[in-house]
Amino acid sequence: MASARSGGTLALAGVLLVLPLILPNRYFLDVAILVCFNAVVCVGLNLLIGYAGQISLGHAGFFGLGAYASAILSGTYSWPPLAAMLAGALAVALLALVVGRPILRLKGHYLAMATLGLGIIISIVLTTEDRITGGPDGMSVPPLDVLGWTLSGEENWYWLAAGLLLLVVVLALNLIASPIGRAFRAIGSAELGAEVMGIRSARYKLMAFVISAVLAALAGSLAAHYAGFVTPGKVGFFHSIELVTMVVFGGMASTFGAVVGAAVLTVLPQLLTVFKEYEIIVFGLVLMGTMVFMPRGLVPTLAGLVGRRAG
Image (cartoon, rainbow, N blue to C red; front, side):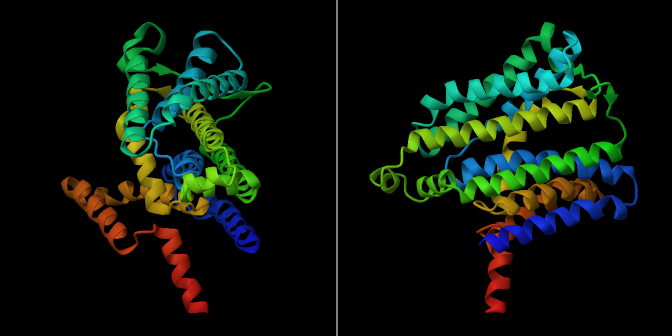
């Protein structure tokens, strides 16, 4: 297991290092940056859904709160961008801590509806409070300035996003291999059995919820600084569904599956534009086909096939 984690991490690092050399133009580099941001969110969301077994349909709200925290604090109030990002992450952590306690007592579709409601509330607040957030028109975000150095250009942004993704993957893999990760897996497999074994499921579910929310907020902050503009569009229900779909498509309880799912479902719509008005239909057929023939997700299924052939 340890060798598989090390091999996967080295493979990911190799891909991230090679990508800028093989991508044909800046447009594809821009897509690669978006893949990294989505993958950071999905790695955190996978801790909650794939390992702890708790569904969330509102994580786009945390992504949006991180983005708007950077926009408001660094733009309106002239905070240093790093301080604004940290403040946004801390605020999201506090919100997730407070809201997660009652929400995570629910199970199944009740939990899904509660997290969906949380995401909708955040979206409505960010859309209607136009004096603060700019409303539906959104608001501009200052460039990311670190110690007097302004980050600009797709190449520099790519290395920042890729480095963050690699760091998050390493941290997630180490967390999963720790006693906390084993508690997550026990709760996800059989919560009642985990309780009988002395695992405080409420504590660990809340921990997974807060960690995933903070990672979404950090990715949202960086995405806002990179784009230079933020709108409520990335806070809505459909973005939450996209994030969950990426996790399920890549393979739940697979950190590398979350990365692959984010990469495929971020890049695929760009490739399907050749189908014009049939783009959504083809996209849906690809998702349906994958789930029918690979119900465990892309990466676990392919890993299982390779393992059986090697055996």
